[in-house]
Length: 428
Ligand SMILES: *Cc1c(COP(=O)(O)O)cnc(C)c1O
Image (tube, rainbow, N blue to C red; front, side, top):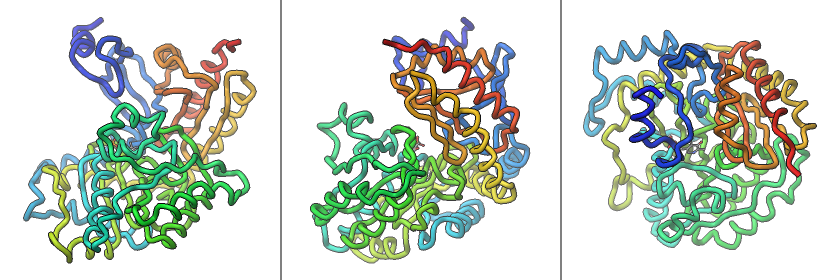
């Protein structure tokens, strides 16, 4: 083992791994397009977009240039009392592109923080209206909203990390999993459990929070757009705010710029992150309606109680602006459609394997759900031997490659999945 890897193993935490029995890590020395270059010279085709973020691939000349240009001006300046062009340009873009009515932009550092901000906005909104009793949240099982405490409290209560911290987390309400898939015929009964919860508890509910259409890290499930449309109607009927977490789905991944568009709805608050900077830097945003912002601002204490040190970091904002421009100038709808077609074709045979529970594709997301938890270390080693980078978790082996991936590279990814998963021995 190289001294670099040895130090890493001894001293560095990685996401969700152990310090005493860490999963193997591989040293990346460079990345370009859809390829990661390892220290030992091997090249891997990236199937993960570094967790939904690197939608244009790595080392993109235009994004690099936007970073260089901004570095020459300033990489950071405080946002208290100062403003700058990168923040304003990006803010204008987000207001234009995001679902109708979301017009007030709060920039923050990461997805989890944007969820904290959204929750805080909802709570402060009801406080401003003198309805302090409306201070709980309603969500659905199987969700993932981040790792900070407010976000953890609305993650899936059993498979998420909720249970471990149960005693220190606020107790929220959880509706059943949505029992109607994206492409299934709509079954109105799928909304019943949710409808009962909101009807019986709306007096204490500040907001509903959910991931639109795609539940990501909580299980890679795709649910029916009519569920989301139904949630919007119920929130209006019972005076509960709707927070939509588009951190994973935003910026085209599901085939629409925002997944809300599948249901033709606008939330009261939206969270954006991950692909916002094309995977270059950590940046997120929480947008709300003018009504919410005005209500918070025109009642005591007369301001919104949040303000991170690195709020609206100019370097991140400049790159995010360039990334959105790049996306809009690209044929991204066609790219996503082509990816969906190829993934559906190539992954379909996996349905017949005894150890496979389900294969599903939506937009630029391809998921193979196994019957049992997979051995991540073993799978990763097999995928690397096939020249691809995947990061399975739990029972899920999935890809969401950069939008720029060529058909051949995508086929190499899907074929690696077929080869490796076919080698798993069925268990009795
Ligand atoms: C990744 C993710 C988050 C958390 O974002 P971080 O940047 O990791 O803090 C929140 N919600 C959803 C839906 C996500 O996919």
